[in-house]
Length: 135
Image 1: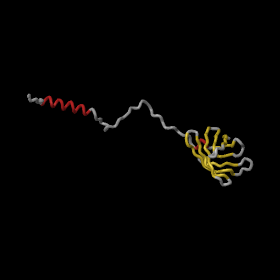
Image 2 (image 1 turned 90 degrees about the vertical axis):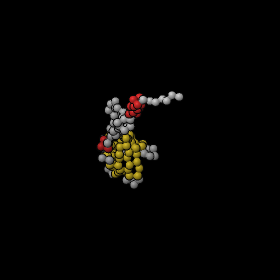
Image 3 (image 1 turned 45 degrees about the horizontal axis):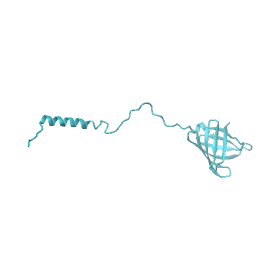
Image 4 (image 1 turned 120 degrees about the horizontal axis):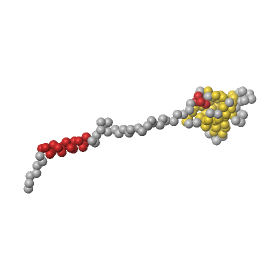
């Protein structure tokens, strides 16, 4: 049987090739993968502010007028000027306004409204709807 030996230069060459191959498996970023952007990132949706709702509104059925101001509102009876309800409002998302209020009789309720610059269409939890127009 023939004794096979590998020459030192050949063994050293094999080690260098193996080391170079292994070096290609690691990266200077510590194994993290980075994706190159092809353009600017899409910004998250910007919701409108409560200030955009600010102003005077009127119920389309003539039941009340309301003043919305910086997250607070008060509605008044148009014939007597007495308070109908007071409460708060906030914007929830694109064109959505949530209103929480307490009536002059002490009942608490809420409404979710779809906002447009000149009209808000609202729905109470019991399904009743009403609309307000900006005055």
